[in-house]
Image (cartoon, rainbow, N blue to C red):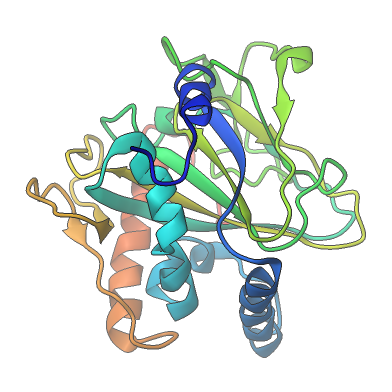
Length: 278
């Protein structure tokens, strides 16, 4: 019996590749996490960017805590089983009234992971509205072959290579996924998705968690890591990430450097050029 999702939600995810919104924490708790983030940004004198955006659970104790949220893991377990790795955690922040966007793309075309069962959980720490540039998806695009992509490296595109589906996406068939703070959306790693610029007066702050079955392999990189967040890993295809005991724990900071470099090499595998991190 499912722990969180209804049979209808599970069926929608299977057929359409996404489900939303699912509340995983109260808005007040989400506000606390946003405060943690913005306190750090104030201390460092600018927004989280570059390598700090990636594998962030190794740097921030509170991100590790979010990644292991029982309600999130129960929801993921309803779809792909109880033995779970989290491959990556990644901040998605759009400042107010800026041109930053995410082009239409399919993640698993670039991540080197041999699974069709990767689930991206996107958690809102601020309102993610149509105006602020919430995610949109193309239902059913997770089935069949990957769509053709090209790397455009446009300055305002948040993606590493500015990768973009090179055939026209029929916007009339897409679905926007607005979220309130403390809510998540789930989508299959093969599903085409995108987001528009933030035209609102508030920051659009989200963080994505990328969960996969422990049987998954990395087939592009020579070495890769993932956090064991539930169950057992009897396969051993990934080095398990250590847990921080505090923000910027020296042991996990050192591991973060190796792990984030490995992800960067995977994401730019076969690329014509390597882009500076955003």
